[in-house]
Structure formats: C-alpha cells, structure tokens
Length: 336
Image 1 (spheres, rainbow, N blue to C red):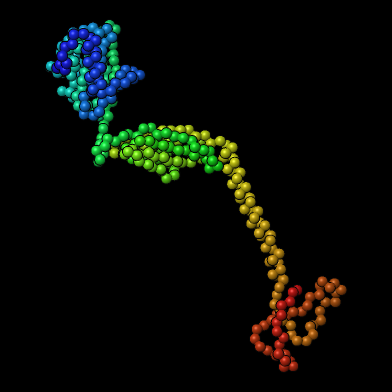
Image 2 (cartoon, rainbow, N blue to C red):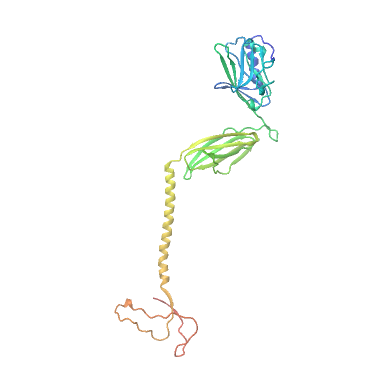
C-alpha cells in the first residue's frame, strides 16, 4: 500500500513527514526514543528512519508492540498487506508503510483508527543490518470525551501540596487542584490509603473549570497523599509529601495537657477545702427544746468545765402543758 507520491530527495521526504506528524499527532522526546501522542479514533504515524538513510527496498524490517505482538513486517517487498502471514489480529488491515519512502531509509508506519488498547511501546527492528538497529517509539492514545454541555473536559493536573503551619495540634496541610473539568473529588490519605478527616473543601468554578482547596491536620510523622479523582473521564492523579512532627512539639502538647489537668485538680481541691468550715459550722447547730423551770444539775463532779455537758431534751411536735397547766416554752436554737 502506498500513502505518498515518490519524492525526488530524502530532504524533501523528511520535510513531508515532519508536516505529517504535526497533522496526525504530537511527537515528544523520550528517554528511549520517541513519544507519539494522538487522540482516539485518529491515525498515528510511528517514525523509523535508519541513520545511514540508505535504500531499504530490499531489506527486512519488523515492527513489534511491547516486544511480542507482530504489528508489521516488510521483507524485500513482501509484507502483511500483500500475502505475508503472521500479523497479530489487533492490527490486521489497519497498518500500512510508505513504499515511496523506502529508498530514503524510511520504515515508518501508519496505524489507522487507533484505540486505547493500541497504547504501548513499539519497536522498529532491522535484524540484518550490520550492526543491527532498533528504534523504540511510545504511542499514547488519549480518550477525549465531551460533557453534557458539549465542552471538552480537562483532566486535572497533579495537585499542589503546601505545609501551611505547625500548630499545637500538628502540621496543617493544604492541597490545591486547579482547572479541572468535570468537578473532581479530592481527599487526603495516609501512606496506608486510609482517608483522613479534613476541612470542608473550598470549591470555585471559572469558565467551566473547577478549582478546589482542601486542608487537613496531621499529628504523626509520615507520608501523606492528596488524591484527585474524575470518575466521568476515568482520570486519577495524586501528589505526596512527607511530614516530620518534632518531638519537642509532641512534648509541648503533652506538657500543656498535663498542666491543664493539674490546674483543674488544684481548683477542685481548693473548693473542697473552702467548703469544710461551712460544713463543720452547720453540724454544730441543732434544734433543742427546754422545759420551763431550772435545768437539771450536771451529773459530773469534775472541776474540768470542758467535761460539763448540759442535759438537753430534743424538741417534739404537738401541743402539751407542764404540771402547772401552763403552756410549753417554744423551741429555740442553741449553739453548743
């Protein structure tokens, strides 16, 4: 299959391919080769050009995905589109090369109507060259969905974490998410994935994009993660930070708590001591009633006046008269 008209020079051919890459997808530098990013259901061109730029019309080159799946093989004019067998069914009828560019050492291929499953590492291999040459290309297929309003959503970038302050309660952490659509779910987690209690998120919306800020306070040394989830577009991202809680801060909090309990105990003790005299004074007051006439003589002959105890009669209720018929003496309260 031929996708382009034969060009007279390698330089012109290379210029056309640069323009083609710009139209079909984006190509970035990658540690192990090229990285091609395209939208789902579009076409992806995977570049492969040998360094010598020699004519490879009579050569062998083989494209594989993830080191296993057969994507496309060309061997001196025989390939998967003109009778050669062995191509993986995932790529059957979807991959073509550029016949007119073989003379310039160009073994690039085009994959039509790419899907998310096509993402991966592709290798362009020249096993018979001396020395053999291998080129690696990473293909990234992105799914672009539109929301109900027809707007293209924006996957949330990595959240931004800030340690705002170290208070007596621990370290105050803040997580910010900027320009996400649809509205993301944002939460704090510890290193074990447990969701942490946090303040109510602050959410604002500008131009269909959401900006979220959420704070939490941690009291232990460890790693903490801010996790952002957009279920509608199957997008997840997160950022992590390490928090160190100093022993001095912990001791200060413990000392303050201990001092608070001691102060409370002191106040309660003082209140009890202040109430004792009033209680003793109240117990010395009793209600007594004396009959009319002289009180009986003390039964003790001791000279120790502190042992002379007056004989008392406890008052009783009800009306009564004495032997002379006179009315009773009303009761009175006497301090002993």
